[in-house]
Image (cartoon, rainbow, N blue to C red; front, side):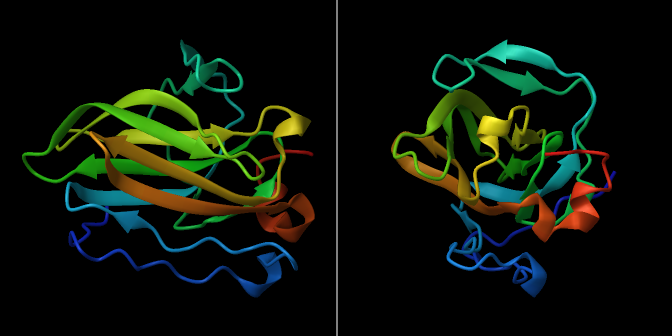
Length: 183
């Protein structure tokens, strides 16, 4: 098990710049993560998600449901936030609350490029376990280049915001081809 990186509450800037080969002219690049003092640690990355997952209802998402992994998610490309748009790939975060912080009914949000309204669902964040939020490319209509953002809010306070830059699959062949994913 790879330990989560402990983040000082006010330290919000710690993301290596995306490799030059992944930069797409005309598209903005992802900004560093922003964390509230209530979040102790965050981990992000990309993973191959070709295995079957369970589903949970999420009526305020485009699909109407969320993927629920059967096992712990391991990021095959940890600390990567430049994601090739390719079927079977997934990207997201793992978060843990600061000691003593418990959020039982936070609103998780995913913002897709070109959409003002986020997809939302209820999540909990505690100091006693990891919580994952991720997006898996299942359909061609989801392969949207641009900035995708993951946020969580509790009682009007943003707990975190982590951005990913989705680029054409050809911009990151080392990731696109590693999973056997195609687009």
